[in-house]
Image 1 (cartoon, rainbow, N blue to C red):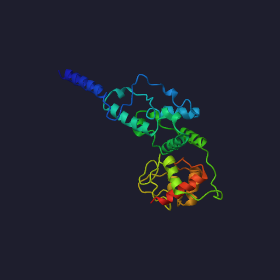
Image 2: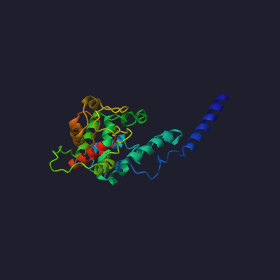
Image 3: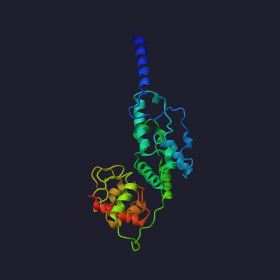
Image 4: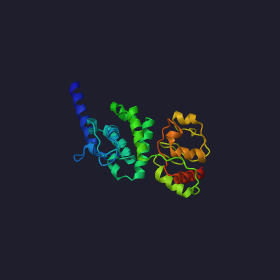
Length: 264
């Protein structure tokens, strides 16, 4: 009788879990959609190096695309709810299925964000790698992502400023909102530290943000010269830091710096 009770309640629990999986409290991620296209179609029309594309498909696409490879437990609540929560959030941040539709500026920003997350080992997220241990990025894969980012938008040398107009904070704000807010905000830290009051601040010193060792040890004070060098090519200025984004045009750098001077 006791054994029969265990079987009965286990069956009821399983059935209830299957039914509740049809409820989507965080949004329907379409984990088992019949019309789902294969992951091999992701970024197939983009000029992404094959080895980089293979890495993104193998280690990012399960969350950051609409072509999720859902495991069997995705049929069961509450596991399905937790999966959909992470997937819906990830797709909002970056959807590799839509890569070809993003603007050039947006692709550059997202590529820099991919590199920042990879270098800091924040992606793939822990709950994913605990189950998919082969999803951890290798050093070689991270270096290929970095090289891809640099190929997308080569850094230009710092300019003497002789042919440039003075920095314009209003224009700089527009550049910041268009190109920088993927990782930074003024008042709160995101993937990058909060930038309110960054002008005149020492590198690696914003309380509560986890910096790379390289930036913490650099001892740089952010001013016109150092910010221009940093925005020109972060890797060349501070080797071993986690940031990969740069502003290629000298006038845009001057404008962004003028804007950062105004935010306290």
